[in-house]
Image: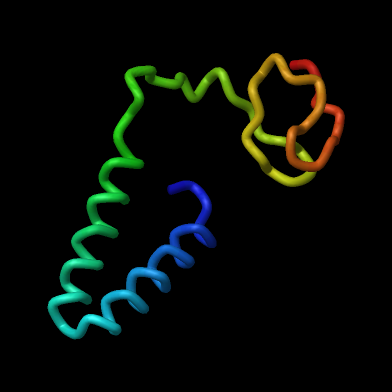
Length: 80
């Protein structure tokens, strides 16, 4: 998962579920979390070329090269 807050939130949810069901529940929740992590890290069949992205000079967010504005902060992206 790209967002660490979502990952941390899922970890807390699974830990809470696992704690409710004891040690076996923690193991099952941990395995489920690993499975989610592995499935989200797999490519969806398209390989994205890193050269098609550029960093915003203000916030550092990754943007497609064809974007005129940063999708995160709205800064005008210079044409290089």
